[in-house]
Image 1: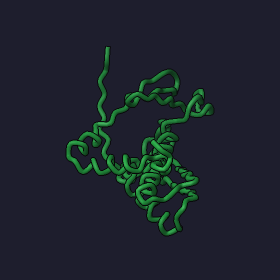
Image 2: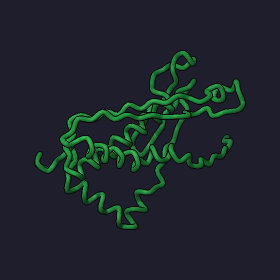
Image 3: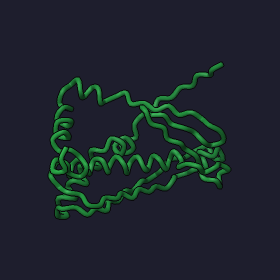
Image 4: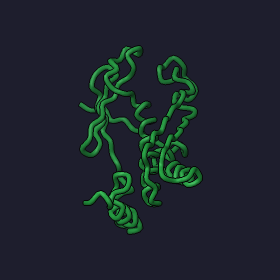
Length: 177
């Protein structure tokens, strides 16, 4: 593949083919899911998550009596939001022929009531009450075009929209051995 066929590190023709293939019901169903992760407790507050052929370690900060050898699950959630928006921005910029030179997304959140997670209070939301994301971009387009691309990235982000819409999470417990 020649350098001329790449924009933002993506092969433009192949990207168009892939995105157009989502119109095919079979392809659409295949990429819809199920997407899976298996999380295995290691020790203390450490866990490993396995997704397809990838593994991610998780831990909590040392001041929570953890070993702090990896980012926590909630930090990885923030990172997943930023990563998903990044991919959406790159895809939409590439589709429009916009060259990106630098792109960074800063994501932060504050817990509503972390005491519920810690088991010292029984009511309230232990999760993030608000999450904010700010993109910093240098690209070959004017601000209005970049704002349109940013809106498409945010509105089209599966991770961001999953959080934004507060989807149902079904849970169950099976006691083994």
